[in-house]
Image (tube, rainbow, N blue to C red; front, side, top):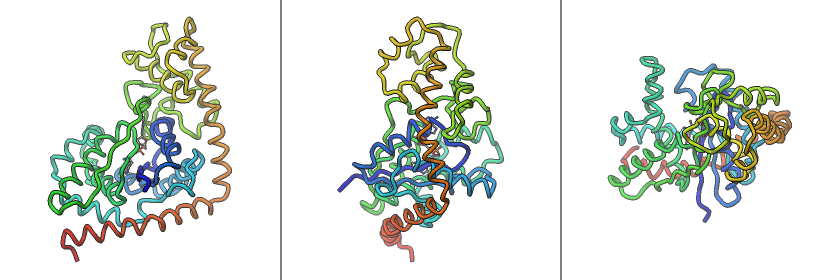
Length: 327
Ligand code: TYM
C-alpha cells in the first residue's frame, strides 16, 4: 500500500514561486511513489470576499497550473473541494470537537484579525476545521505544505486525537512535510514578510504566469541591503531570500553558489537569477497555454478527480456518523 499524500491550494490571487517551490514542486516529485490527492480549496477561498467570475476562472487557472507544473492526472487525483459535500459535513462535526481556544491560537487567523478587524468572517475563524476535514477524510499519511500551514496540520492531529480518544481509533494522524529549504519564501519588495497571493504590491511576488520582462523587473527591484558580500546569511533577509530562490531553481549547493558570486555584485546575482527564473518557468508557461486551449480538458480532469475521490470520503463519513450516533 502506497502512503497517501493530501494537500490543497486556494484558487485566489496569482500562484507564485513560493507556492511552487515549497509545495507544488514537491507534489510533482513524489506522485509516482505516493498515492497523491490534490484539492483546489474553493470553500477556503470564500472565507474572504471573492468576485464570482474571478473565483470561477481562478479555479480553472490553478488546475491548469498544477497540470502544467507536472501533476499527472493519471498518477494523482485533482479535484475541487466544493464538488464533494463531505468536506463541509465533516468540518461541521469536527467543529463540535474543537475547543474555541485551539482555534484562537492559530497565528494565521490572529494575523488576519489584525488586518481585517470586525470584517473578519466566522468562516475565516473556522478555516482550520475545514482544513482538518480535508485531510482526515482521506486517511492521509503525509501533508506536504509550506511552513505557514504547519500549525494547521498540527491542529488537525490534535482534533483527530481528541475524536479518537472519545470514539476509538477513527482517524489516521497525518504528518506535515515541510521542505528543509524554501519552506517560507519571502516577498521581494519586503523580505521580512512571506510572499503572499493576496499582497497587492506589484514587486512583491513572482507569479508563475508572469511575462519574462515582468519577472526581470521584479527581481531587479528586489529589496536587498547596503552590504556587498553575497553569502547565505539569514540575518540579511533580502539577499538570503534571493539566494534561496537561486538554490531551489538551480539545485546547486550553497558553497558553489557563494563561490560563483565571489567578488561579484548584487546586480550580477539579480541578472542571473532573473534569467534562471524566466528559463525555469518557460516550459510550465507554454504547457499551461496548451492545456488551457481546450477548456473541456480541465473540466474532464476535475470531474474524473471528484468521482475517484468521492467513495473514499463517503466511507469515512459512514464510519464517523455511525460512531457519533447521527442519523
Ligand atoms: P495556500 O493556497 O495559501 O498555499 C498553497 C501552498 O503554498 C505554500 N505557500 C508557501 N510556501 C513557501 N513560501 C511562501 N511564501 C508560501 N506561500 C504559500 C503553502 O504553505 C501551501 O502549502 N490552507 C492552505 C490550503 C489547504 C490545505 C488543506 C493544505 C486547504 N486544505 C489541506 C494542505 C492540506 C492554503 O491556504 O494554502
